[in-house]
Image (cartoon, rainbow, N blue to C red; front, side, top):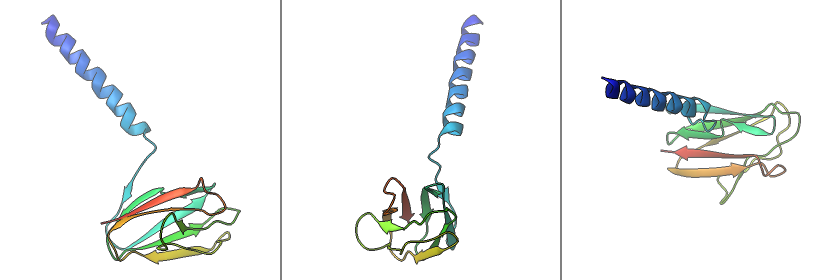
Length: 117
């Protein structure tokens, strides 16, 4: 009987630690059915930072920050906005499957990723 309680206690500890890990994990991926998606630019960050979309979906980046930002492909020319001021937006329709990583040119630590399935 004591052995069974020890096993139950061990399993309970694992479940508690797993719960803390999954609820505190900041790398949240947002997945929505095909259609239009919005990414907010605010506080020098893209939110969500990673987005999974279907082919043919349009993503709109809305700048809600007080400074200007861009949406620029890390490689290639898939994404390439002008400087976006507060209240301005940039949209792009993804017609090809792939992973598209991007950044803000004036603030290269601001990064994001679109995964098109």
